Length: 159
Image (cartoon, rainbow, N blue to C red; front, side, top):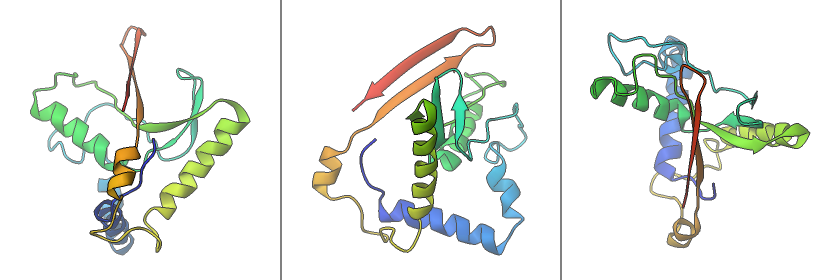
């Protein structure tokens, strides 16, 4: 992925973390992947909060900054649509950083960069990527689906 964070996104993340720092009872809500699915608690979900080696992908992974919000929205969408992905749906978003020691080191770097994105040098609301940065940005997504019988499907999207 190549691109920069908008100031509004950075400010939203910072406001979330600031609110949690003031009211520790919010930690339970933030840690609940089903916080937006009232009355439904699905299966245990991956934490996605620290670097980990993923055997299925033969790669180290690091937390994706937006996963804390995105995963909750995906579970809510699944519920609102009548559970087309199933009530046993497990979902996570991570950044692939590669195999071996280099992949592990890169995962730790990504983790550190995630913290910087909401720090004092983060863009302010209204600031963000320039038109040139937006036009030159890119992404490379890999979806891995594992069925209950162990079958795997991989799909990629680049842009």
